[in-house]
Image (tube, rainbow, N blue to C red; front, top):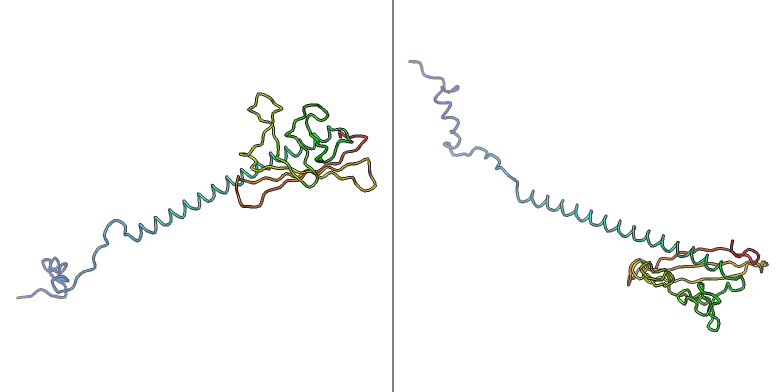
Length: 201
């Protein structure tokens, strides 16, 4: 009787050979489990964490830059306003205040000058005044401690050499980005020259 050739198993033997490795004492490679491992979870969390940190840093930087730009615009406007108020004074009155002779940019020559617009003494500074938009009186100034913290201004008034009919007015404004910060203050300088013959130009 012919016997089946064992090199090529018969149909019943083929089914048995599928399970043969376990029966012969060695295990077939295990199939990968479904789902994700703990390491994969940790890597994903780390990536998300770094992403959120980067986003927070970018938002913080944008807020910092926007605040700085807004402050500089306000300060530039204040500097221009101060120069215009100087130009409105009589040419002979354009000078730094002294202890004996204070000068005020608003209400000059009146019995009730606006003391908030006190012109600093030479080498000194004074608080930066602004018009309080919420005030009932448009001439009631205050100091914007929230928008321009520690805002102060100084002025240097000089006469160009050989030109007594001219006066150069240089206004410098300093302020802090935030109140109480330890970083160096920001500064802005604006200058103009007035002539005794045309003081308002």
